[in-house]
Image 1: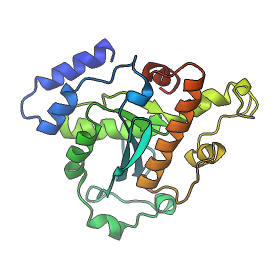
Image 2: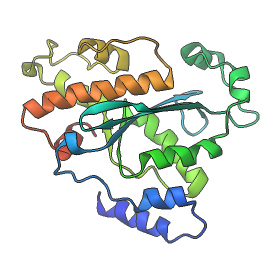
Image 3: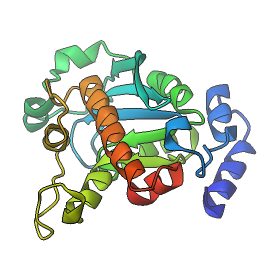
Image 4: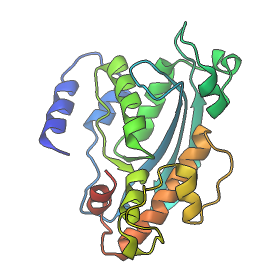
Length: 236
């Protein structure tokens, strides 16, 4: 954790009225970067949203699954739909991607009711996402709007992990160095032998993301980068 993040978390803890789940998340120490990634607790997360602009689009579904001791813990899998704010229109292009029809979302819990559950699941853990530049702004906006906090947590981005291997063809990916690195989760997963079923389902994609992280972290470990810090240097 850098000094600015530490200061921000400390200042946030000085506020009154923070829910206990948020206070516990802010107060939890970050995992030791010198420890093996296999001894680190991770939570893989996927968001389905009404678009890609966190300033105007909204979270519509969340899926998470934990990784403990280098294994995906299916008994920790959790997902929920999220109802959009009144008046927010989920456009047809978005529906075509994730298939979340307005009538399904109408009866879903509000984001304000879902966030305390989510943040409790992230306490003291490393977040794993695919393309953090998409998910992190949505989380940051949600946390800021609810509690005045940023999305202050260690993150591993599986897209960046994969891009590292794409840019080093001698590591055995079979791709040329000047090719554009694969970015789609399903494509990268298939490339390392992970079966891919339904796509753009929050829980299913979180599970694929978790498996992909394990596959790529194992490769890095074989190269002598087996610590959490080494994993984050490549995947952040």
